[in-house]
Length: 245
Image (cartoon, rainbow, N blue to C red; front, side, top):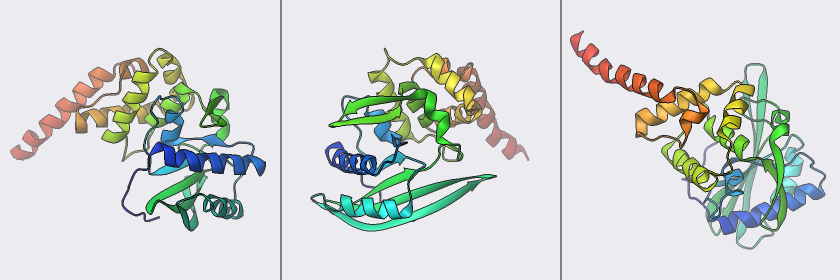
């Protein structure tokens, strides 16, 4: 799915779209609707993050329902509806379906996306123990708690891993929630989801590429400091070995 150049939308604009989408889908009896992505972090932050899209989770959406939502969103001032697309991605014996509504918000590109699963197409039921209700932006919004939200952000798939921007945003989220976050629970969640190795690779790669660490990463992945240092040593030796060949 080719996209225009990324332009991030102010929270006041995407919050309006969230209000319309969330209320519309609740009226349509979509019962497993969850806020996802950077907006899930914004739920727990004083200053919500700018975003290029609005991410939601539900296993109860369809193309027809998304087209109806797109028409509803287009009734919002300064919002223009362009296209609705559906994409299926396979992960061995599982598949993830993504619906994307392409909009123009004040003439700038913006997407509303729905995912029917998480991580490598695992069912939304794995999030059930960590779901809570938060009142924000005039809505009662269901999303993952702080710990599961952080776990999902740490578990970006390789080879992209965690970008510098995403790391900076995560650290802002952590700083604001430092007294509330249980890092042992984050580690436990990653273990339950069997993605702790993903996260370890992501943290090591982030440090190698950007010399940037996630706050309290050592409480989430034991011995991460030692493994980062070993990775740096291994990579610093490679050019010397090549030159000797």
